[in-house]
Image (spheres, protein in one colour):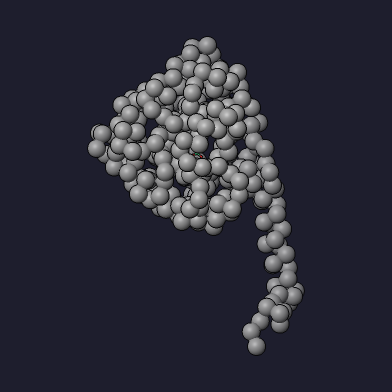
Length: 262
Ligand code: KIV
């Protein structure tokens, strides 16, 4: 998948699949799969580093994980997430932050929100850096939003999200993540925009979907939001493998001569 395939797929009505990924070994698995693109999301601050929000992600942390993913998935289109505040400084610092992710191996960057970002987006695009937008539940603004909850419930909020999405397209974004917004609104935005929308908790009518690696593989039995479908019970499967290993070692069944050197 290359940058123009995002538009091509939307025009051909072929859904785009994106998954987050944060490390080399997992990236090798994605690379061998049919998934279209990888997002090295700042959600790694939560699912890889145990924080309760994404605010702890830094530019150097994002670059470190992006580099590992780029080595493991050389055939996939990689989107690097610009972390909290990294793109809200002066133009030079904002460009440096985006450049760091591109140099680490990303093919594009993602940033949250429209207001205050439009000039930067145009500048990055003109500088050779494709930009993915992100509207709806924007976790970097969690302290403004008052929690991880569905956005765009009122008419006023819906109008704002609609006009923000048009503004992001106009500024040059090649695609737009819509997170936790009502399906009807996501449908309307997806119909109106020429660029593809990538939904998470945004219903079936976006042009593609993105899920977090740990969520889609069922790695956290306590995380069960309505929008999530778990394609594997990863927690239970891994727990069971670990318990089998423990039992066999303690019972003297592993290693055997088969797993030993003469
Ligand atoms: O960081 C992330 O994983 C994201 C997705 C949820 C879209 O931004």
